[in-house]
Image 1: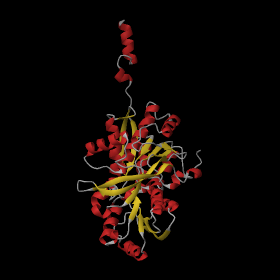
Image 2: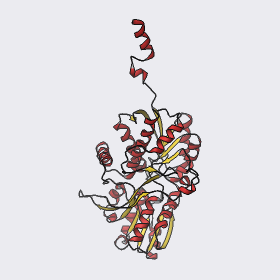
Image 3: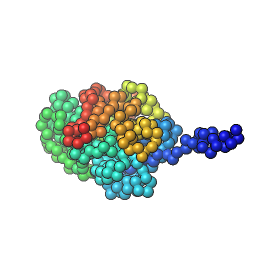
Image 4: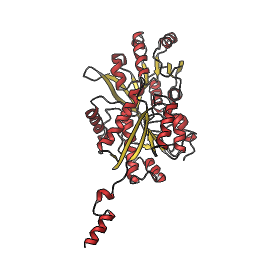
Amino acid sequence: MKKLCVLLVVCGLLVPNLALSVEPVKIGMVTTLSTKAGYLGEEVRDGFKLAIAQEQGKLGGVPVELMVEDDGRDPGKAKQIANRFMKRDDVKIMTGIIFSNVALAVVPKVVRSEVLYISPNAGPSALAGKGCNENYFNVAYQNDNLDEVVGKYVSEAGFKNVYLLAPNYPAGKDHLAGFKRYYTGKISGEVYTKLGQSDYAAEIATLRAAKPDAVFFFLPGGMGINFLKQFSQAGLSKTIPVFGPAFSFDERILGAVGAAALGVKNGSQWSHDLDNPANKQFVAAFKEAYDRTLTLYASQGYEAARLIGSALKSVGGDVDKLDQLRSAVRKADFESVRGKFSFASNQHPIQNIYIREVVEDGKGGYTNQTLKAVFTDHGNAYVDACSMK
């Protein structure tokens, strides 16, 4: 009997903690935590960390180690971080990138290296169409999506002469392309600004001269704050309605801009007031954990973590089982805070897209209120250009 007990101990059968001890799965997060856009990465990171905390350091029951580094919105720096994660740390799953130009610099090499990349934000058309890859998934949207819904809404609302404004980088071009895809009226101007620009006096003067009956702009983070303030200071907010995707009207921007954004309509795949159990739990948990109002970026970080967790659970944490891991991600077997969620064949979401309105929150501040779903089970325009079917 003593010999049997010794044998069982050696085999680990009487010490389950030793037998089940495994190294945590490393997840590399390259995101933007500095510059005036740094809060975007902060929101993604904190949403992701909340999902890990809710499982006491695990995702899908599998221990994980989240490795976070700031890319400073610099594609070259982001490439260096990604290479270090893969070569030094043997990371097999990566996430976190905010800006599309950074994603285009990093993602192709990552996925060619047989590493899974789960995007919590950037969704450039180039990676949804011909540049799609079986190792690349976007859990948020394809860039054009949140503008397509606004283009349709603005057309249906009867606006016939709209002025367009966006930064001159891949996402800026995608966002305006998305708006134009569903907008049926006249474009009175289409202007591309410098990425990170803070002074919009010249653009506002040109806009005023064009005399549009509405403005659509995509300016995320600090860019949106500066533009909205200057637009209001110029007196234009009283006469020209403003529209845009949720990135230009998230709750952090509204806190900085205030009443200048009141009444603005914007497109989003998520909002804090979506009425489903997963979302109610998430919103409450985030506010409790971080003591601040969350944005759509936080929801996207949270969903990226939940998606990864569903896949890790399926393979028992064995990230070397790449085919099975990839298949598990594709199934999207997690409870989404958006409600219904699945992947199109190019591995970007099929989901509802909503119009929201900026309203007073009853506490002296401003927030977004969902008006209606304009698109249901909406995919993206680049599926046919992707070779994966």
